[in-house]
Amino acid sequence: MAVSSSSLFRLSLLLLLLAAIVTACITLPVEKLGGGYLFGLPVGFVADSIGATIGATAAFLLGRTIGKPYVISKLKDYPKFQAVAIAIQRSGFKIILLLRLVPLLPFNMLNCLLSVTPVGIVEYMLASWLGMTPITFALAYVGKGYS
Image 1: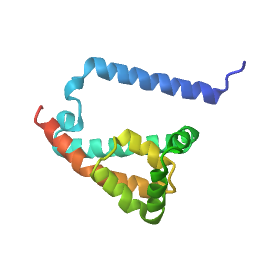
Image 2: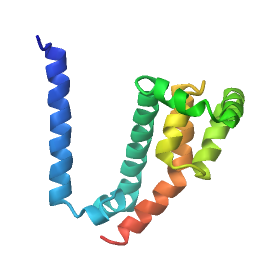
Image 3: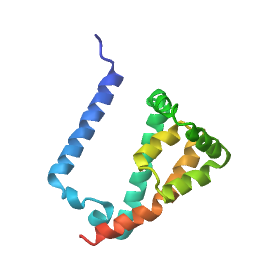
């Protein structure tokens, strides 16, 4: 079996990422890890905000591509979700913003569920970023208190 250079490059990036995560967990105070603790409030808030938005977008894109059949198979038993999808189609930004401001579902689950709706990626990113801003600020503020 021949291994392409593209596959080898992806595997190398994955191993590098795993090594970085393990190194961070060993060397950094993980129980206090956060932007507010590491960088102070202003820079920590910005770093956390960017990181949370990138993470939510990555999960959204994975759910929209690789995980789409799985997510759709799990939603077949929930006809109420169809109503949510229709509402998102009509006013996606507002619905996503409200779902982020009042987290009825864990964010990870919400990323996957929203990935199978007709919302656009830019609309999703902007609404998620704005909706996660208050909790991100609060967590950065609390983290600042430990530094």
